[in-house]
Amino acid sequence: MNLGLAGSRALVFGGSRGIGAATACVLAAEGVELGLTARTAEALSPMLERYPSAQPIVADLTRPGDAEQAVDAMIARFGGIDLAVISVGAAQGGDFVALGDPVWEEALALKFMGMVRALRALVPVMRAAGFGRIVVIVGNNGRQPHKAMLPGSAANAACLAVVRGLADDVAPHGIRINALNPGPTRTDRWQTLVGRLATTGGGDPAEVEAGLLAQQPLGRIAEADEMGRLAVMLLSDAADMLVGTSLTADGGANKGIA
Image (tube, rainbow, N blue to C red; front, side, top):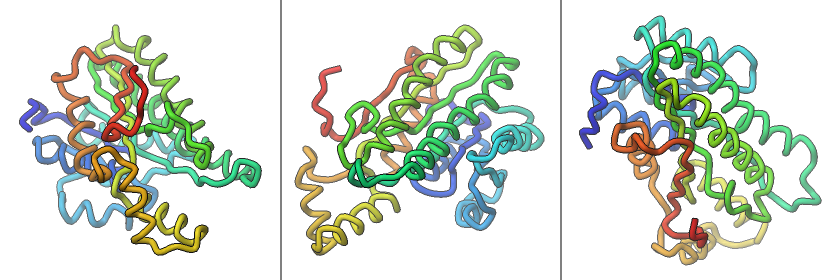
């Protein structure tokens, strides 16, 4: 896309798969130096084969201190951080009454608190540099809760509240924070969802997927690289006037007018 990001330094939390990995690929194509985190070194191996110059960082955002260690490793390698992507966490769905406390606690521990820990580690470094661009990959059910995915909806809504409030605080220091809310996207998580629905409903996975796709205005769901391109656009000067914005990209599934 040639967004003028060449030579920038980007830390991607959750850069081993899904939308995080897709965003990292777009950043690499733009000439950005990459630091990639995942919970294990093995998870990062496929991305490192593709981008051997990337800095691998093992970090688990459910553990206090790992976000700071990731930031320190990035600075030790590249001297600073200009851009950051936070793409971590997914939540189990199901019937509200049947979901126990561990499901809710897990959703908040990784998706919400993981984001909070990453932001706490990033903001002081970017504030000292007087510059920073952060995109948090959240999800469209934070604004449009789904009855079968309420733990994830609650975690996403909390993420959006922090993005909106923190963005105003850090904007005067040259830091811009925004959120990207993808709709259904073809990742491992999508395949898991289709399989679970097929199992619980006693149907064929292909038929279940066809039914879900028929509900989408475009007749399809997003590909991960489509979300990656949008995330990188939000990191670029093309989106410089977006501050604390929550950009929903779900192919028209959300019928809100705001």
